[in-house]
Image (tube, rainbow, N blue to C red; front, side, top):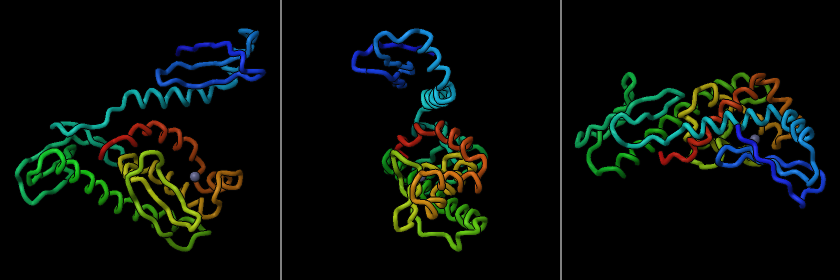
Length: 229
Ligand SMILES: [Zn+2]
């Protein structure tokens, strides 16, 4: 890992650390900060640094799947190679072994993209509905599945409105089921605590003891939010 130290007269007493897009860890330190102090600070933030580093590696390795034959598309954490059959009706999308087979009635790239988007929407509807049913069944403090919807979002996996309505990101259906469950449970816990305070995390600890591990894994999928379908 590359570390760059910048002496910055605007910083009076604290060290600042930021990860740059290039993967370099930039440290801004007040003038006169000794090497030992900088090293101690880096060591004290080891866990945060390694978390950000893993995330950066994942993101660097991720390429949004294209639409050429064989392109690897994700569904529930597994990869499927795209196979397009042009001018075949009715238009359909099916999983067959390790193949994501699309029958395209015509219409070219846009039609293919739209077909994939609606297939992911359908899958997300089915998967989220089923998992919400299962998870809500395990929660003593929740009697029924709250109103929810799914849509393609670019900056978050899910959210919960003040009125108690969940929004879930369609892209999430590409991630492994354990991560789908993590996001769903996170949003369900907001029905009890509409904030990220101590009480909220205590509830997460009680309902999903390994949620931190899952959150870390989900961090590796952040780049997926930029997919076009
Ligand atoms: Zn939240």
